[in-house]
Length: 168
Image 1 (cartoon, rainbow, N blue to C red):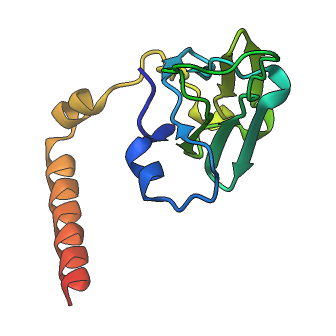
Image 2: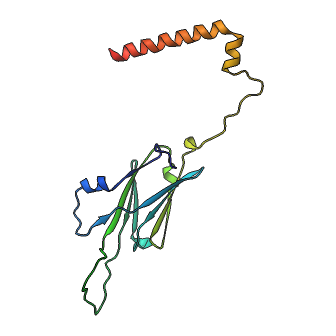
Image 3: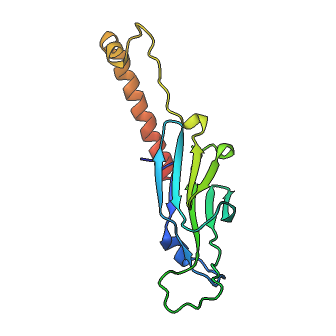
């Protein structure tokens, strides 16, 4: 699952509070978010939206997806009853610093938008090597018990002073 610090969604509730000047309804496309080792992938369903009807903008940390569905015209027909409502799509995601903004890519096929948000180099997980034959904290504390007791005592005093300073 995607890390909450890398991608946050702005759902329909946020969009309902926004002021609109459009005459057509705006729907929030359903989206699935996947995480791979090197990227976050967003798959958004926008039925009826062609590739040239998608607008993706990134302003500061807001990634906004907009999809426009052309109004169908049927020559020689008059609508007697309709349940299908024409409208557009819009959804906003908040990106963290863990996303490489320059590497974002998108494809649209059959009304499905697929965004690939590569992780920034700093956000990629990596293996931290352990030096061979290096003692860990527990081993050192067993070898030098008095030193670590003093160190813990000093750290505790520093923490106490920091809290006292902040509370003033």
